[in-house]
Length: 353
Image (cartoon, rainbow, N blue to C red; front, top):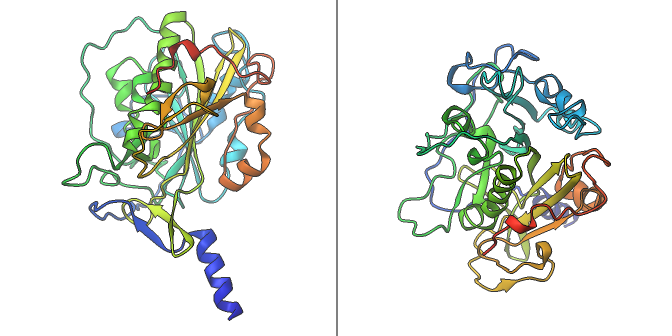
C-alpha cells in the first residue's frame, strides 16, 4: 500500500502521466550527432541556416552587458551563465554580421532545456533603428542543425495549429525573443528557431503578451533608446484528473508546456526596470475582466492573458516560487536599472485587452 502511495506521489510531482493538448501530428524530438561547438566566435552568417555559432554567453553577449553598453554603463551585475550550466542545458548564441550595430556580438542567446525541449530563457537588446521593413513574410520554423545544436530538441511540427481547429484555442510556437524586436529580414528570420520557442496558448501569445512586446518596441522607437530584455518560461502546465494534476505536453508527450512566461526589461538611461509575469492560460476562454493584481491595475481578460508586474528585486525575492517553478531572475545592475522600484516607463505604451 505504501508503495502505491509513493508511486502516486511521484506521478503527481513529476508528471509521468501526460496528455496532448490537441490532436496534433505526433513528432519525435530531433536527435543528431553533435560535432564540436566553438566556445565563442564572431557573430556571422557563415553558419548554415542561421544555426547557433557558439555557446559562450559571456563572450558572445554578456560581457558587453556587464561592461559598458551603448548607454555607457553596465546593465548586469553578474552573468546568467551559472543558471544555464546543468547537464540538461544547452547554451546557444545566435547572430549575423551587422558590424555597425552589433560588432562580434550575438543578436540573442538561448538557454535551452533538453529535458523539457523548450528554452528556459533568452536575452536580447531592442535597439532604436530608422529601418522600416515595409512587408515581412514569416519563414517556416526550423530546428538548429549546426555544431552547437542541442540533442534532443523539439521539431518544427511541434505546436502547429491542429487541423479543424477554429480560432486561437490551441498552443502555438511562442517566441521568447520576438521577431518584431528587430528591423531587418535577416534578423527576424533568425528568431524562427525551435530553440527560441515554447508552447504558448495562442489567445495569450497574440493577446496581452504581444501587448508587452509591442510596448517595448514602441518605447524604444519613441525614446530613441535601447532596452535590455530577458524572457523566460517557468513551471509545467497541469490539468486536473481524478484529484491529481497531470502534465500538459504538446504534441509528442515530450515537449513540456510551461505554466508561466516572464520578461525582465531594463532601461539604463532612465535607470528603470520591470518584471512581467503571466500564466500560460491553456484552455481558458473566460472573457471576464480582471484588474486586481494585474499590471498597474489595468483591465484585461483571462482569455487574453493576465499580466502581472513588479520590481526586479520583488521578483528575485520570491524564493519559494522561483525555486519551485524554476524562475531565473536576471541580476540587473541595482543602480543602472533601478531594481528596487517597479519602473513605470512602459506603462503609457501598454495596451491590454
